[in-house]
Image (cartoon, rainbow, N blue to C red; front, side, top):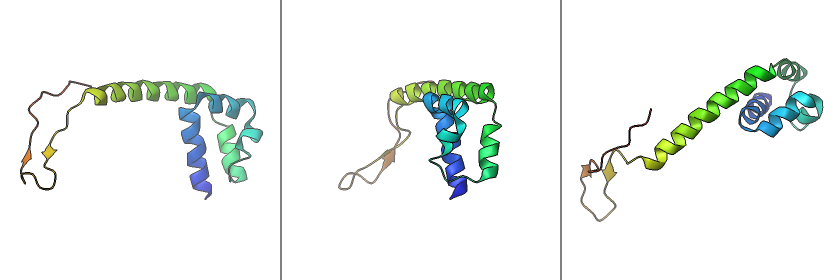
Length: 99
């Protein structure tokens, strides 16, 4: 379970700014709710705030761009529902260019 806890802490630190702030301001109290070994706690305490914060910002920009792109995306294929034609067809509308 320890690996899952470590992944949960890192994932939350990247996606939750308030948790990230608490992790660096009060690491022992913040990490107490997770089932971590002493070595894992030491590794998390050794993380650099600026690096983690910068990564979180870059990830947030990419997720925001991806979400906006998906909101306008069209399906690549249309698969017929049961009772309709068996054919798989391409949609007729053009896709939105997102990069």
